[in-house]
Length: 305
Image 1 (cartoon, rainbow, N blue to C red):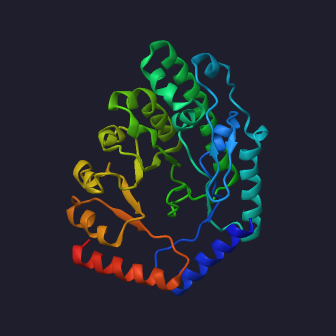
Image 2: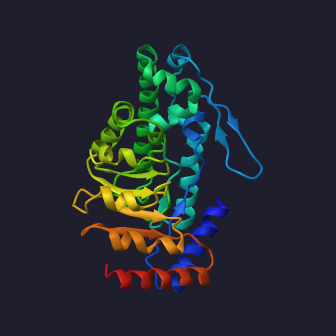
């Protein structure tokens, strides 16, 4: 907890000292393993990296034996709520909390079911039904976690990645990375229904995606109130964003992070009218933050946005 509180204090100090749009957020950060662990995945730990979930399912029969867990009987999930309560008490009721890692049900199923077998299951009619049942269990569990987080922490800022502030009344964000490995019809069969359900339940969603998933952008547009998109540059860079989204009211705000200094100008210059951007730069060093702010404002003035 102390690390979270200290990081929040550094953000507050930076916001006070620099002319910036930064909104401090105390993030309850975790790795990607937490939901798979609740279903029984073994966890691999490292001395120099985040833990990860290991698959333990290889067949449809094994998948169907998995039961949907209880939130409060899942130590890793329950501890997130305990941590959030302690951090909120320490910082006060007005402090914004950031969420734990947010994974779609299908992405969690891909951690549970060995991928070398899972992709075969997707095209096998009998096994694909079991995969959809498993991802459905994971999706329902994720939705229940989101519901409880919203109830427990009214000041939660939902953008889990890259961690930019988002209004607490907005819908949750989630990582959608497995979509890069499948065709659009498979995405719409196995993954899109969950995202539509979450958007309808919570009034919209934001998305983090670091896969080679440009071929899914048209399907993303089918998500109601898809309001924020953290697209990590893949092989094609940021060009597909400004080519496939038209800047209309249905275009999400592009929340870009980890953008090289020399890559910031292109999306702004090529963006269609109406497209909006948030550039997120994470640093604990005030001098580095000021350098980046000066650069970003210079680029912004040149592109006349």
